[in-house]
Image (tube, rainbow, N blue to C red):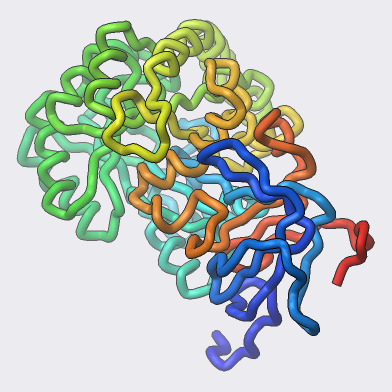
Length: 431
């Protein structure tokens, strides 16, 4: 039985509204790449109240960061919290409670890894919407969830694995999208090409008609939101942009003309480079050898495709009207999954620097850019007064090397300390 009269948490604990001061913090401005050293950050009512250099008042709740860098919590805009690996392991009749419990475990891991916001793009039994609402009530630790419910795919399309509903034709697509929005989805995900996970499909060429795409966009606009598309190649992306789709996932094979049009239309792109660069992870999760071989074979083409997109990137994160493709981070896999000595979210950020982003731009892809994509640019993604206190501390300077994110000893969400692995004795003392 829930205890609705439980005692209020102490300052700094999850769910606390009590003030908390972070001292000896090197505050990262992800917009400029500058670092303000030796700052004190006051957190009050779940938000950043003030950043300065003065000491906290006597008796205040204080965490000394010991000279660590403080930056915004990470945002992953392409994840599936409930997915089973390999994909053909999905149980289409699974009890929704089981699905939600699996998603909750992945969400908890993501949060502890420093991912304080996720956008989900297809979940079995709409587990993301259920978990989102439970977390908002304080019943489960989870990142802030922007949920898509179930994705929409054509019959025989890429959306297998229990994460989608299937529809064909304008009217059926319109109804399917409206049904997800009525269930509480924050956006609509559609599959417009094949991918690299299933036999008998290709990521070039379209699986979805323009009428079906327009139906999904119409439903989204009726609810004041947007459509994001799984898309591998240029032909389908060009069609989808003309239909009003504003965001694309993967981009395995983008040609120069498509990249130029994407830049002109100022679309968002989530490269998900991780999915074609993680053979050890795939093998450990029982993927078939043909799936691993295919992903690795596509990898070089995928990287070159994203390099073309990065060359056409939007370079001013403050101006939403500036031309260019906005690059954002997402892994396709749960972002807190261990991979190559870190987690998938951080590995993706490292791969983005291979594609041509600077370390600061990789940080922007995982913070301010992603925040703008999900419509929360005035709420999350920066360490600044008035913003939600979704914060992480890292051991080295991430503006020089995003591999600094391998060491995240402190995670704060909405002012509550989610993870504290700081040394118990720090220079200057720990209060």
